Length: 214
Image 1 (spheres, rainbow, N blue to C red):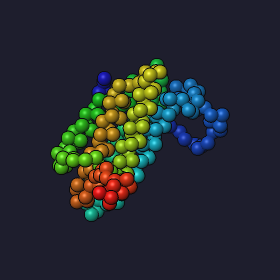
Image 2: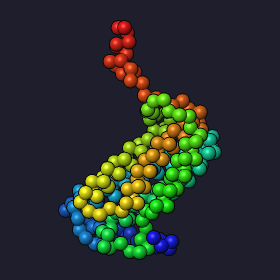
Image 3: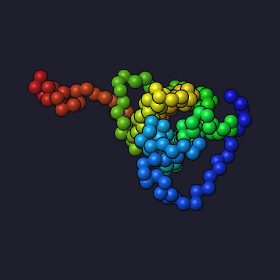
Image 4: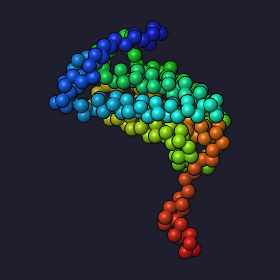
């Protein structure tokens, strides 16, 4: 792929509502009208949903960066991810035959950067002896929400790929991004010296009952 930069957005949003979607259809980037529940719309709509969750996590990271300055690094990464998710939405909203050479998209560079960040932050973490439950802190929980929505976006993209062409770079990106959210959720717990909440099978109601009767 060319190293040429992506083109700037060409938007003029003068009105929020147009009434054109009242019948349950929407337009792709090339102008084609498609049902709002089509796989393509579902896929980039889930990426858009993920972007909102990432924004919430970024706001939390910024809010707590005063007490833990290293969270500014994470906030900057999350802002970059938001831009990347919009690039993903751009290419998914466009049929392959309508893609412009300079149109924003996901490339292999995005997945490679995530791998670098996963490896760097992962080296600081203790090995896991059990699965981790979300909720050791607000930011930890928000990043775990991002992970699960990212997995849903990935599943939607895989389903879409059964019916039409999907960019392989986009699939690699979402797969790697969900891994990154998992590492980031553990990393914020680690750098804030917050105990991780580990899965304990016998913390269930049945496990506790059996323990009392033992």
